[in-house]
Image 1 (spheres, helix red, strand yellow):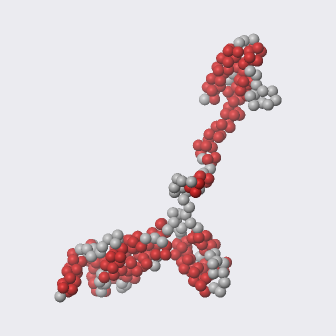
Image 2 (tube, one colour; image 1 turned 45 degrees about the vertical axis):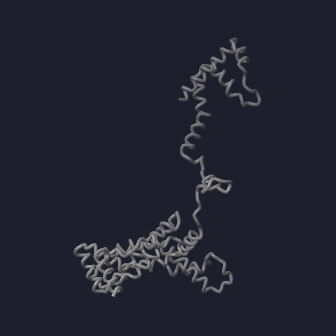
Image 3 (cartoon, helix red, strand yellow; image 1 turned 90 degrees about the vertical axis):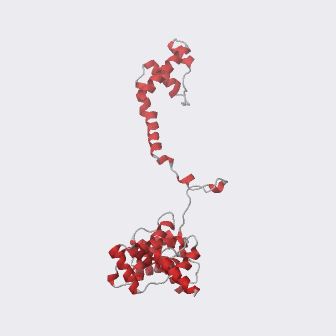
Amino acid sequence: MNATLNMNTSSALTLRDPWAMVPSLGNLDAYISAANRLPMLTAEEEGRFARQLRDSADVKAAGQLVLSHLRLVVSISRQYLGYGLPHGDLIQEGNVGLMKAVKRFDPEQGVRLVSYAMHWIKAEIHEYILKNWRMVKMATTKAQRKLFFNLRSMKQSLKSASLDIDTHRNTLTQGEADTIATRLNVKREEVQEMEMRLSGGDVAMEPLTDDGEETYAPIAYLADDASEPTQVLEAQRRDWLASDGITLALESLDPRSRRVVEERWLKVNDDSTGGMTLHDLAAEYSVSAERIRQIEVAAMKKMRKALA
């Protein structure tokens, strides 16, 4: 009697609030258990709810259709646990696909919702896996998607059927690549490229910790400052100043000022002669060393103005 009363109470509660009996995905075991206990709809009930949704946009009818197929999402999501992503996330994405299927389902087509919804559920789960399995998206074209979701299983089945004694060999032979390419109707090169992508892994560009030499990450040696736009412009500017710029600035000086600058600055690194000192130049022009220094300072200011 109590069991019957509880069942009737649960049914009535479900009709008022279709989601009342489904716990949060935070408690995955309880969610799966509740989804598997929800009753399946008969063909007549399914058609009636689908028509109510189509004709009247009945949200409760949509809820009944979704609830009765939550177990389907749970079942399909288990097929993708090998990708290492959280089961709860796979179920959540599958539920999104289920709701899209319910919204587009036409009961007059003569098929059950379960058959129609499988495509949408798998499509959403596939998209989630492709976006989250690696930081870099693994597949973008239709052929790459087909390879991504079939290559590992087909590769394993080929190796199981092979008589090759090297059971630890991970790479495909040319014959195995050709076989997979033929079965999936893709090019052998595409099979080999996807195998290379799957065998690789993500590498952190920046160190995860700050202790010791083990934190030396690719960001430390992959950066090429020489190709950075501002660095290129600065290098071009320095090259111009060291050649044409100096010549242009010297042409703005009178002969004496130019001689002073050349002797004091442009011959410093000349190992054969070297540059003249202030006193040498002062003796040549019969002025004081302080006067030569003043001429040098004025000439440098004039050159900077010319370069600016």
